[in-house]
Length: 150
Image (cartoon, rainbow, N blue to C red; front, top):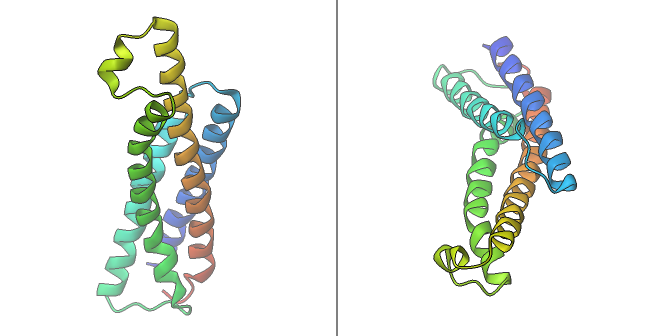
């Protein structure tokens, strides 16, 4: 069980790290990234797999040497959930900052402005999720360091 958890935690660290890099680069360039979305979703699936494996280990009575492992194994799912909620709010935040009441009102604006607002929303969403990936990468690395004894 220890080996499987370590492999999944390492995969989560790698995937979330790559997603953070791809997302950070896209945010910096102010351009959408084709790689970011798939890396982000793969990292999220892997975070759920790590949490599920931790649950199986707990159900089997396995105990790590360091009790913080449970925090590091389960928190990435919570971080991803909170980040998704913030991502959902990002469109509203961008529209409010430009005094645009809703998406329908944006549709009445010139096409160039619509594109600029859409890019601002995508950039904000990417930044939020890339920062979450940085946190998840750190948590996965800590999970690796505290998984001994499972």
